[in-house]
Image (tube, rainbow, N blue to C red):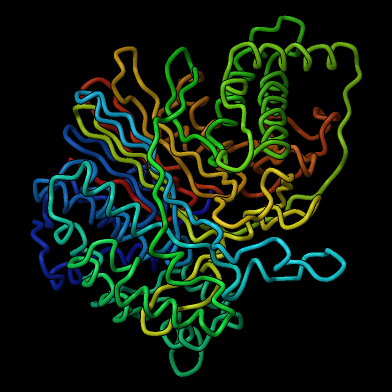
Length: 586
């Protein structure tokens, strides 16, 4: 597993003692036990790693991708807020401190669950294609994709929904004023924070693609900012202050919207004021399936939550088959083949349900899982089973996730993103805001893979107003009484659903602790390329010679899981030790 450097750990120590004391509105007693995981000066041994990435509490626990985001959530809670206030505060904060993963011009999904009030809501505030976002814009005269156009530059961006989504959810279900929950993020943007290793690598590797405004913010003396140097985002702080006053009207028709429209006037008005003003957050009921004999709430399409349910239910059916191999090899076959089913469905049918038919009821039905399991069994027993070799490239972390749970079972699970690392590598002048590059999540042309090597179909073709298919699958597992038991999600592109599934299987079926389940080496298969991804530590469990029916690639997993679970009267929170986030609680 990746072990954080001593430098990063010392940064956390100094950060907690010095930095927070200068942020307006900070009211924490840093001597309190519940904040100790932030202060560990060195992380060298397994025990110390566990102490950093796991925490228990009685009242409230939050797990995020950055210590400052977790702290922002705690601040909102201690100010009298609820899980939604903590979620919104942490979301604004993580947009400041993990710009390589998410941002206020990005988007996301969220599941909100208040069991006592019988509230189960799914929010889609993902980016949408602008009205001028048409498929022909991204291909040449021969119908071939124009290299890089969906990845870098102004045409890579979809209409953002992050601000609109957060403001709406806060207004509907939060307790604190919006002004209060944004305070932490403003402090982080204006006071700055030290560049950490992952951010430093992201800035350096993408430096040449950045526009001048972005290089000014993320650079110094005409070179990229380095680890340990301070990132200050003054223009972004001003945007946040205007959101405090104006809410989401700031991005719809305020100064920020005007600056975005002015920027895009140089690019054929690809995105205009009307796109921003008319953006709609979609609110619906979560979809639900069966997992481990309990109900799993997750996002409807264009999230991949439906395919996550298909995988879990097919895996469960395969586990009942007496004719299939047993032991570790059997476990590997059952999980891999279930993954192949889910990702094939994703490739063939995944898309925006407002533009294409996604038969959710079919994919989450017991009958479908049994049918697919029977077909897998037939092929394995008959020997008519084959795979085709392919390639799976290593990719860096991006996207982010927030999991929150309190003692009453109130919960929020939210995954957010600007898609690729540092989005489109463009800062809108005068705002400090980074454009997303979510247009790459569409199928640009038939058979052409995206950034994550995923191949989509006509169902996910670019069209004005359309939301692209997403791997993001925020989820909440309920107990027998309908109370939130596990809040879980992950960043990591195509590996998001399988990361959630790997973790849940280890925790709910194999009996590992939540921390052990998050840490355990993972398997991943996404149908195309037809390759079984295996983390290197599993070589000793089943050598490649024992898996002759799969093309195996041993490679480090790029996804990170963030989860909070209720165990009796305790809340247990974990952040994936593959990353640099931490859980906090009390």
